Amino acid sequence: MASPTPSRKLSTIGYTEKEAHEQSDDDQDSDKNSDQSTGYLPTCSTSTKHGQPPNGGLLAWLQVLASFLLCFNSWGTINSFGTFQTYYETEILSALSHSDISLIGSVQSFLLLAVGFLIGPLYDKGYAYHLVVTGSILAVFSQMMVSLCTKYWQVFLAQGLGLGIGAGCLFVPAIAILSAHFSTRLALATGIAASGGGAGGIMYPILLRQAQMHVGFAWAVRINGFVMVGTLLIACCFYRFESVARKVRKLFDCSAFKEPPYTLLAAGVSIGVAGVYVPYYYVQDFAISDGLVNKELGFYLLSVMNASGVVGRLLLNSLADRYMPLAVLAITITTTCILGFCFMAISNLEGVLVLTILYGFFSGAFISLPPSAIMEMTEDITMIGTRLGQLYGVASAGMLLGTPISGLILSTVASFSTRLSEVAVNTTDQSPHLSLTNEPPLCLRADHTWALFQPEADVLHSAVKHGKAV
Image (cartoon, rainbow, N blue to C red):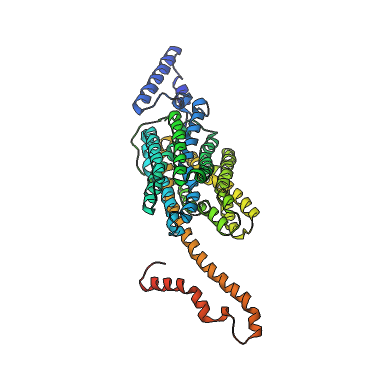
């Protein structure tokens, strides 16, 4: 942003010293009137020279703490859903499929991002603190309601809709506030704040698991809710909104999508979130069901992944301050994609632990880096909330579809792989039989092989016959 200082210096050329002094006083009065007319608040971000962010200070770092706690209770709940997924599959929702259960977490994640379309402009209008308080109340209330749920629709309403909307009200104000306090260290501050999501993903699953073993699932969820109350109260006490200009903003900034960097970033984030969170939902179930880890250790894999994500957010975001955030983001998502394919080759405990740590490290920065990129490419600081909100609003479609589709694939592949393993076992068991008798082994008998795959074939035939999508 261009500084007004040079124009003021030039305006004194040709004036006497007295006239120059009077001109300077007029400029200062004009600035004050301009500040009042545009809604400037007498805060640290606007009281610094030429309106530049202070890039630190006690108030600025208190905002980082508040943002950390807001992310702790927004993305922290999203990152913790894998523990609920495993519990629901084995307990109260055991009759439902992987896809049906993961839809709850997907809707929660979708709403966290989708409400950004509304939250961003409201933030720019000056309602940031109202959003934080509203989101805090809704998130805590929904968390407590989850403890009372016994049916799918109840869990869907409380955890999917309620927690999703509440978390969405917290996320955009948590990240957007930092641009009013930091400039050269903005990416680092954003990384520290966003690491709250990883910290929540560490603490909430462990707390839920340990409390569940002693007081049951319902009270374990309530204990998590009490932690949310305490941390959100601290965040509300420290959060201070720095309004640059209270002007009516557009709900949707179409001009942003005329900028190729912004458009490509929105498309990339949308595609990325469709797959990057699949291991967060299924790593526990994958490791336990495949016998790679015991049940007790398996419940902590999600916390391990989130712990490495905290380190990744801090280190990779600090690199983004030295280099372009988009460049660091590109390297991060490429590495995350490669690591995702590596899950197919895991066959032992050591492999699961190493891959979980690496995947968490690189995927953790995937959510924390886009805001830094948005703030870097946005010249008008008053539009950061809108642009950040609509970016995540567009990306929410990928978040909604990714994990349910993965759950559907998981259920189908698991069913077929079980039957294929039966064929393989029959082949091994019956191979000596072939050399001793004239009868073919079971695996070569068409009636036996067809019986193994008939259930899926009947479903496929019925869907095609009635014109349904498969």
